[in-house]
Every structure is written in C-alpha cells, then in structure tokens.
Image (cartoon, rainbow, N blue to C red; front, top):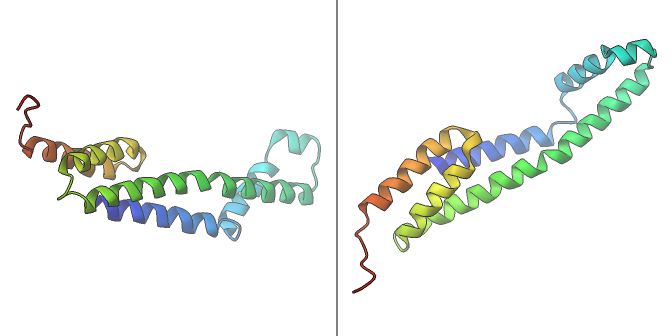
Length: 132
C-alpha cells in the first residue's frame, strides 16, 4: 500500500509540474498577487511587466519542483526494492522500510504504514547470536 501511495504522490506531483505553465488558476492568482503588491501599485507597473514576472515565477516553480519529484522517485525505488527483497533479506527490508518511512514524513500516510511494518518485521525475526 505504501508503494502505491508513493507512486500516486510522485505521479500527481509530476502531472502538476508538467501542467504548471497551462494552469490558468495559478497564473491568475500570481498576476493578482503581483498586481496588488504595494510597491507595484506605487510605481504603476505595467500589466506586461506583471505578466512577465508571473511567467518567470512559474518557470522557477517548475524548475524547483523537479527536486521533490526526484526525492519521491528515490523513496519509491527504495520501497519497491525492499518490498521485492523481503523474503531473501528480511532484516535489510525492515530497516529500509523504517528509513523510507522516516524520510517520507511529509507524505503523512506512508510513514504510518512503513514504520510499523518495519518494526513488526524486526520483532518477528529470530535473534541471531554472534558468538555461535
């Protein structure tokens, strides 16, 4: 389930980023924000300049949103790898689930699934005695 949530979050953020330049609501919101700025009103800034600032802001946001998409991609790959290697390496998978859960704290639901799953896997593993 956590893998599905990570893939869904990454897909939603990717679609939002791809359609960012065509988002009329965002463009209107930014244009109104820059138009209502006290400094812009004092200096009587032209509408073309405000539209240019809005376009530059959207391009900047599109560039910045690449980092969270990459971060979610790495977490998704780590989660999927741990999921598929659970039978062969249960201890490593449990630790990976806990680490991915801790690193994906901003997605709220994913850590609630991964951290308890990792802890339960660690609890159910037989103790290994190093001296034997």
